[in-house]
Length: 68
Image (cartoon, rainbow, N blue to C red):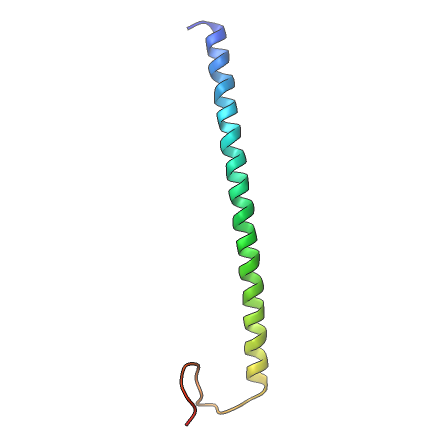
């Protein structure tokens, strides 16, 4: 294998690696958006829980159970 062949193989390897890096970056962006969405949902749930607890109510009442 000549020098030109080795250079060509190196260039094609770099191009393939670049494509993989770009796909990984796109995947990471999508995952970050999902994480941020879940974080927003958790904040809303925590807020609703705090509001519900601050209003009081029967202490024995649990989520999923009917009050007596």
